[in-house]
Each structure stands twice: as structure tokens, then as C-alpha cells.
Length: 118
Image (cartoon, rainbow, N blue to C red):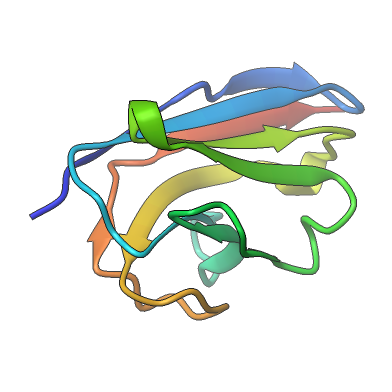
């Protein structure tokens, strides 16, 4: 069982930046982020393999978000720039045994709220 603990969410104005962090209690093949707006489907944001050599980005994240990993700290980061109101969501850290665009990751954090104001 891998525990994931997110931090870094909060309130930011349109055009601003936030960095999310997720500390993992163990090693998995991949770590990533999935977000959800209440009443809407979950959306894949980004994922990275443990070595940091492979990354995937969802359509909404490409060009604005960057995922990275610090193996020494067992921590994955999501740097979010040029934030828009439609980025407002609960962001979940996820971990699993594959690197793909799906939502079927094995482990989920508790989520951190990101709110982008107009």
C-alpha cells in the first residue's frame, strides 16, 4: 500500500501559478495528477515514470503545466502556469504500475483544491 499526500493547492488569480507537491510513501512505476470538478468526470492531467524519463500530459495541461519528480524525496510536482478559471478543481495525486492517459491508477491521495479566480 502506497500513501500519497498532496500539498500546494489554494486560491490564485487568473494567469497566476501554483506548484502542487505529492509525497509518496513507496515507489511505484508512475506518479501523476488527475483532477475533478464536482458533478463532472475526472480528467487526466499529467503523469511521469519513476525515472523521470517519460511524461504524459492531458490536453488541458500541455504547454502550461510541467510534471517532475524528485526520487530522493519520493515526491512528484506539478508546476501550473497561466492558470485559468476552468482549471479550478480538486487535484488528486495518483500512482500506479503503468504510464498512460487512463484513470485506473492504483493509489490516490486525498486531493487538494485549486481555485482560480477571475
